[in-house]
Image (tube, rainbow, N blue to C red):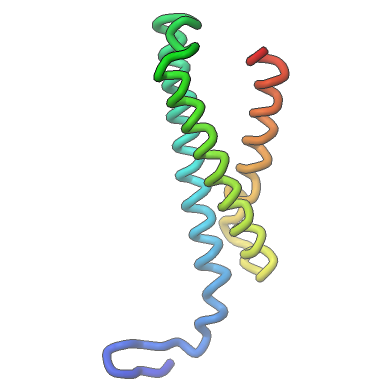
Length: 117
């Protein structure tokens, strides 16, 4: 380790990058999951209270659509970052970042096929 002025520089800084990327991917995936769960909770409560009229063509339906798309986009970013971290041999904490995007896409396709006709 080299100390220059008030800053500490590690000689192994490049080896920390995959771990930092893996942590970042996990945090983004967790935030994406929280956004999607919040959107689904909003539509679930709206549907339970007012039925289908409460969620179709209202701000609740629009907010839910936006949260799902934002969560999907964020999970795609986490997925790519997780794959890069995995490729650079960071193996810890990648299960959520690599698994969330395919799971959300699968659930969205199944919901479109069977629920949202």
